[in-house]
Amino acid sequence: MFKVGHLVIYSVHGICRIDNISEKEIAGKLKLYYDLHPLSDDKLKISTPVDNHNLLMRNLIGREEATEVIQSFRSPGTEWIERNTERNHTYSKVIRSGNREEIAKIINTLMRQKQKAERNNKKLSNQDQTMLTSTRNILFKEIAIALGTTYEAVLDKVSGLIAQSA
Image (cartoon, rainbow, N blue to C red; front, side, top):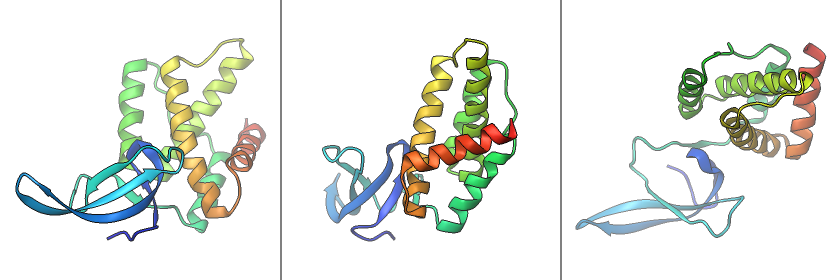
């Protein structure tokens, strides 16, 4: 069980702080709920049952794993899937899994595809750009906290690793 004040990754909201653990009566049953808010939006309040087994809430990445994830950007990433719908379905499934190594591979692939497109005076599709932006923001902010640095520093480091291995 997480504690009040704990930073966690919660679903697509990214890094959240647990503000309270409260008891609420829903449909005549008392249950414990986590009350949390995303660090990026103090006004958004989220309440989710403590015993929700489908809960996509996990601890922040540790320093060692964060370093390993950054170093993984030296490698090519994951397979590029040509068909948009198949790519979106496959990549979204991996992102929902919460596996940071696999998420990093998708970010890596999307960043490389973006560079490739820009070299040809093109852009990523809106769907790919949205996926890249949201997943990169969540993972890189999480890594920044683990390493005691900034999102921008993580982005610069990763961009440099991709450029070196291109």
